[in-house]
Length: 317
Image (cartoon, rainbow, N blue to C red; front, side, top):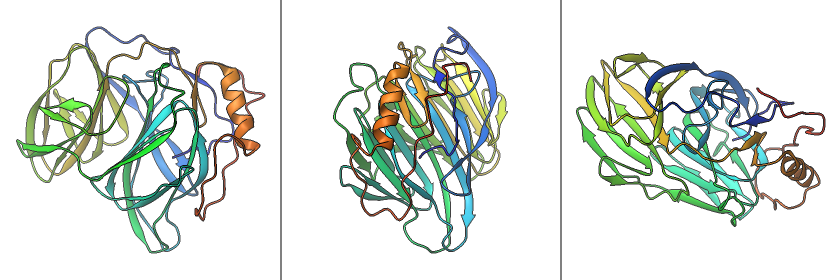
């Protein structure tokens, strides 16, 4: 997905507090942003307090929202470099199209993983003009320097490993957890887990102490080591945790992300991740000149134009 901000600032990953070497419970409010035309989302990463959680550098929570006929998602062709886009579908359907020629509908319980590498463009649209419902999480994963110029690729994962424990359906979206390994191909040590319950539930999940973690409730209320979390906030958990206790009194769903603290500084601007402002300027010029990123065919949505980066200075956001 793409932000519709007209003049986003350049976010430097180290312009925030250092990763703590111990467990914390740091509540961070999400902010409202817009994707496509009229779709509001809660943006949890990046934020003033935390730019990244492991290699996870962007986290949007879209919906749940019901939309009328002809008012579905329409995020037109736009570019990416230096990252992976990771879409976790909860309700509804989205049609992905990209410059490699892939067309893929993503449905509930599935993941789309697109590796931008040296450059790719894609669009995300409603499957049809019928009324519908949308609920999803989209994340970006920063590629380490050794991988960020790799050839672009796209993978669709219709089935992900899961187990049931204490009333929670625990689905491993990325990395390894609970003895399960996600098939999603990533390039940094990280983890992504979805916890879903249809009624009261509780469980304890083992964590890697060397990872930093954060949690975000997608629906309902979840108690995390005694801290109640509802949609609209990210709960940053720090490092040093070997386990986490989760509980809910009614139907609820929560996303947990984590990973080894990312050792490289990144710059994030619009839909690009780079290491220098010059790289961002080159990518912007190339996209607006319709070179380097290929063509997305078939999308009914208009091609997005990159904001002007020329007047934007590197500063804290």
